[in-house]
Length: 92
Image 1 (spheres, rainbow, N blue to C red):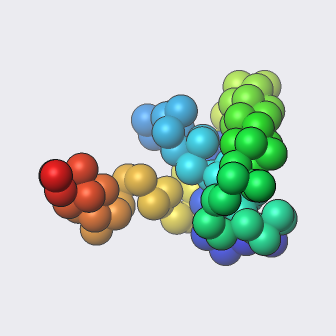
Image 2 (image 1 turned 180 degrees about the vertical axis):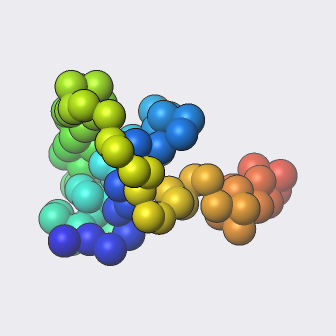
């Protein structure tokens, strides 16, 4: 469905809450078509992200362990993404 969402089940260490929320945010962006939030879309979008995050967290906790780790690394674990986030945080 969305190539930007990576598999979180089976990660070592386990997926963080931030990684689960990032995947939920990508999913909600994709299905809603909302790329940037406005006053008209913010509440519905953020509510959906929270609900998808909660459901995904429960799903990952309920599934049995994977036999093999996922083939891709989630974006928040990639050095280039971490560098971009750090650069944004450093800007005044």
